[in-house]
Figure (cartoon, rainbow, N blue to C red):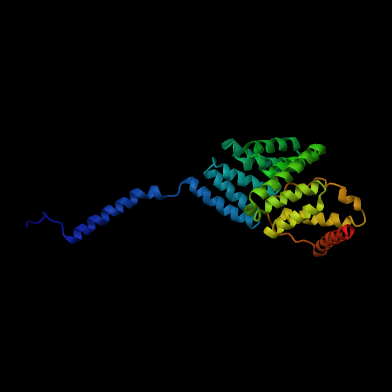
Length: 287
């Protein structure tokens, strides 16, 4: 066989390596991370920092992510949430609005914008945002409850009480419809407890908060609500009329995060003791 008509084994290996290397070079841009993918990675790192309470560092990462992907409504929303955590409510409103400019049906952004406005005592504007969220998802109990809080702060207590009753009704309906899911939904029980507290139904609120804390021992809203109910029950020992008085709306900004918060043990014990005493007296009276 004449030389040049065949390729030796080493030659074939060399050709294969050259072709493979060319394919790798050509394919490299395909497998490289896009700016949007890098932005998502930065967002996840920022989320971890938020969980650790490192809000300033998280804000920097969210900003870097937005520089790479300014059309991510999710990143704008997370930026706004973190801005609220450090008290930058006007900035948060702008961030939520950026998210909504990108996605007008982003329910969470409408709710969050309402919270940021409520924190600045812009109650009607907050209600408008809550209404936009409810127009998309009418069964959102948290949003409905916060709308009631704004109405009460505006002096429209009758309308607020209607909303609190509606929150309780919808919560109980959801618990009957999906009992297995309700058994693990701390937010559902907490929102029900909040509405019951505003209605002056303290024993029921106490039980709802207890269930929320059982599900999630770090549920800040439920723990704070349990403490408020305990304080009311304790003061009611000398002023029974307190048990017929609805809780006024809190002046603090709406709280969302589930961070550890210790319950004063003596105060919790007194609240439980008061409930046990009330139940004992009631049983004796029915004999």
